[in-house]
Length: 75
Image (cartoon, rainbow, N blue to C red; front, side):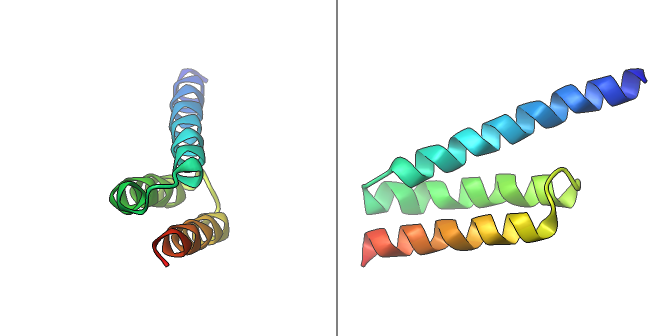
């Protein structure tokens, strides 16, 4: 039970950090800034998916939508 409680707190922290980073990326309007921040966010999403905190399909959908967003900024 102690391990579960510890992992739950860690998972909540990582999920919240990733959600905030995703929100920050979606609010960016500077293409260069968004391009440099995108790999960090994708890395966070991959780590959450790898640890089964987020489902793989959710991670793929998020990554896809974020890349589309950044590409629209540059176009």
